[in-house]
Amino acid sequence: MTLVNLSEEGDAELIRRSRDDPEQFATLFDRYAQQIHLYVARRLGSQAADDIVAETFLAAFRRRASYDPAVPMARPWLYGIATKLIAKHRRSEERYLRALSRTGVDPLPEPIADTVTARVAAQSEERRLAGALAALSQGDRDVLLLVAWEDMSLEEAAQTLGVPAGTARSRLHRARKKIKAAIPMMEGNR
Image (cartoon, rainbow, N blue to C red):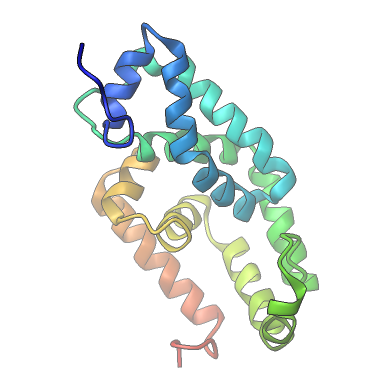
C-alpha cells in the first residue's frame, strides 16, 4: 500500500481520485476556498461571498468528471467558475462599486486601530478608484482584479476567464490605462 502525501498531491490527481471517493474533493476546498472567498468578497461584498464560494465548489464538484487531467492546478478552473458566478451578480457588483465611489466606505471589516489613519488619508483615493473600477467593462475589470487582487499571471487570468492570453493582455492594458487616467494623483501614477 502506497501512502500519498496530500500536501504534495496535485489538484488533477486529487480530482481524479474524488470521482471514486467524493470525500477527497474536500482537500481541494481546503486549498482554495479562503482565497476564492476573499476574491469574491472584494468583488461583491462579504455577504455574497459565502454563497458564491459554496456555489463555486458545488459546481466544481458536479463537473469534476470533465476536469482536464492535463491541467495540474485547479486554481484557474475554480476562479473561472467563481468569476462566471460573479458575472451573474454583475449589477450588484456595479451598485456596490458605485456606492463605494459615493461614500468611500468599504464594507469589509478591518481592525480599526490598524487602519483608521490610513483610511482617512486614502478615503478620497479609494472612492475615485471604486468609481474607476465601476466604469470599466466587465471583461477589463475581471482581468485587472484577478491580476491585482489574486496575484494571478496573465496566463492564469486568461485561463480563468476562458480567453486567449492576448485578449487578457489587451484587457489588462486597457484597464490600467483607464484607471491611470481616472486617478492621476494616486501614488505611483504621478
